[in-house]
Image 1 (cartoon, each protein chain N blue to C red):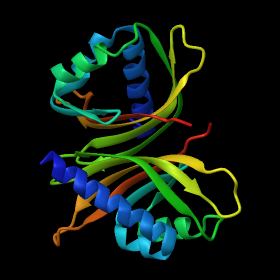
Image 2: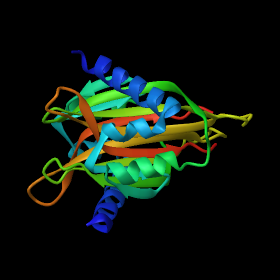
Image 3: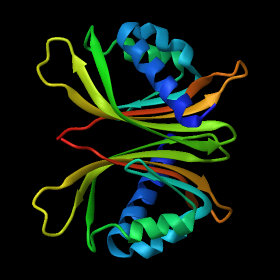
Length: 125
Length: 122
């Protein structure tokens, strides 16, 4: 069971950051009206406002490089908490930004997950 | 009570207990609690406290930089913390991030269901 959780967590974060780095508007498929994002302390509620926030971040291109992914079952009807650390490379910027992010994933009937909770913080040196 | 205030109160209590009396963390976890500490997975209050009390330092001080919280559903609360950890005798503080998933107890407080800790290396 534990291994399965790790696989699911890793598969989800791979998919999430791939979308973020290549097709940010498509992130809307991963959120719902009940979803919550706290982005550097700013609280945003619902798929529409969350997508608007992420697509309006002040850079066109970026690349997430993931260092660690930790997953645990959250026992909310098959939910999973995922904790990620890594770095974010912006074109033209010499130094990567380091970040940590946590997701609370809730299963949908088809066997996929949506992001119910999302908290993002840059790790300043 | 305001969720942000609840989260802050929990965080203050958790880290002051950690820094003063690590064994006292036992009543914040239950049998079903899970800790992932720098990638190592530990389950249950007893094993978790055994891990935390056996960490290779006597004294430490957590300094909290940011606390973010969100309700996770059915009364649960997710808390995301970043800060530094100062070990006695070490010149440089370690940076860390930690997330807690808190669940309410019948007595009206919270216990830690999920706990994930990572040092932030530069």
